[in-house]
Image (cartoon, rainbow, N blue to C red; front, side, top):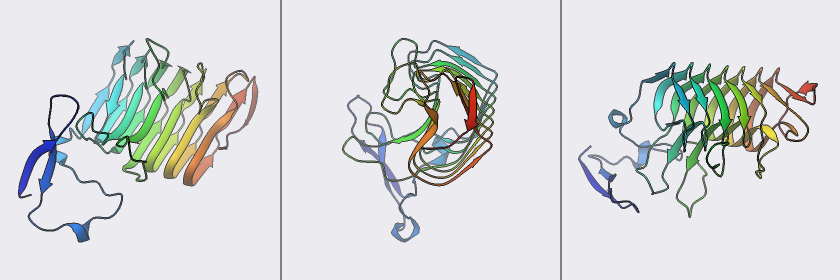
Length: 243
């Protein structure tokens, strides 16, 4: 890297995002979907383990980096997503992300989006990219994310929302008492969008017909593998499928 200058203007008095000048041209070395960033500034190789968080006015935890694990935590009462995994180029905050090689396992997530005030997309676990307001998300910046053996109980909307990613494993999670509030994408346990290479294995979604219509939904999703998933509505269990 030859030069780095702070030029990015935000509505807040920070002026901290960067314009980067490289020593040699990189046009022939990058493709659509690649991400350029500084790994040394990305807080990678993190561990969040054996913590308790209650009644947070925002998210219990937000992850915008790679190579880490979140395990054996108890999260309760986040107003927005309990666990948010994101990349952000919207312009309000410093650009960050993407999420790569991150595991979320053996956590308990309760009352997501049911404290203080709910967010616009208050899934208990949400993986997504936040673009500038005038743009639509077309890329899939996130890679190799694992959600394993988590318990989600009580949620304003869907339990797990996965977007803008490639290579996601979702294994052995239990979701119950979902869709407590009315949202456009509600009524299901999972929502997948703009995503490819997802494996859903031995996940359980449970609820009543008042709040649960099916296992999950998908839109612009490819290479999806479903194995031994179930949905139980009013005590009746069926194979889990994506509509």
